[in-house]
View 1 (tube, rainbow, N blue to C red):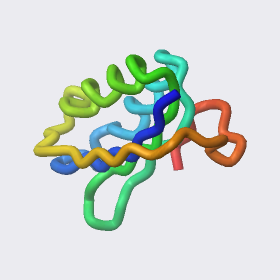
View 2 (cartoon, rainbow, N blue to C red):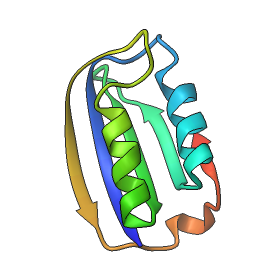
View 3 (cartoon, rainbow, N blue to C red):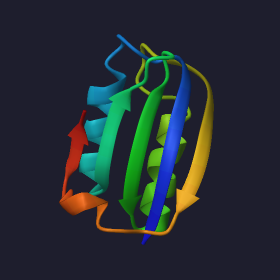
Length: 91
C-alpha cells in the first residue's frame, strides 16, 4: 500500500475540483479525502495500491477541465488505517 498527501496549486477552487477528484479516486478504488485549503489550494490524502495512487497523482497534475493546475506538492507517508475511511470523502 502507498499513502500520499498531495497539495494542488492553481485555479483549483470553485471549478469542481473536489467532486472530480472524489469521482476519479472512487473509480480507481482508492480511500482518503479531498478538501479546500484557505490559501486557495486543494489538499488530497490518498491511499491504495502504489500504481493506482500514482495514477491519481498523474490525474491531479491536470485536474478537471475547468481547473488550471500550476503545480503540486507530494509527501509520502507510511500507510495507515486513515481513521477508518474505507471510501473517498469530500471534506
